[in-house]
Amino acid sequence: MFRDAQPQDRAEFLRLFEEYVEELKLYGGEMEPDLDTLRSARSLFDSYVDGALPGVCVLFDPPGEGLQGFTLVGAESGNPVFPKRKFGKLAIAWAIYLQPKWRKRNVAQSIWVNTGKKLVALRFDTLMGDILVENKVSQAACAGVGWEPHSVNYVRDLREWDHGSGR
Image 1: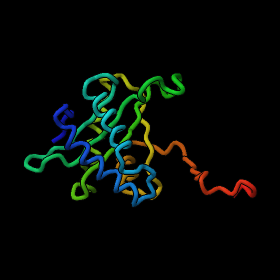
Image 2: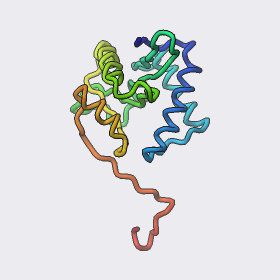
Image 3: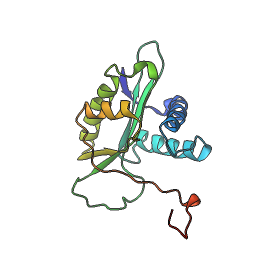
């Protein structure tokens, strides 16, 4: 049911990634489903699949259903901004997506357990990712496998800022 992505999975992965980005908009997500976003996702996918960067793309591929979900997790591209952290070697959870019919069925927890084992084998020490505040299903799935809240991201759209009043 879970397997490592292969180069020939790229088109199906990108189809699911587009669904993921569209769904994030429901929760206030900031990514746009445009060519630049898909190029970035493709670049991470290719880098993890071919081993250019340490990371994994684990696919959820139940028999007879086709690809139904994925995780995309691993190192930052290039040099990390802050290479020495108390967390040790950090894996970034860029994305997890499951098609809706598989949610609330412990599939998310299972794909995270599978992904986590692969990250340990790659000698990562910590897994970190962002979950949108309104995405309660993802929060519950991550909590179910031991993720703990760590920080809160605040966002300010500078394009709409009245610089005189600060609001």
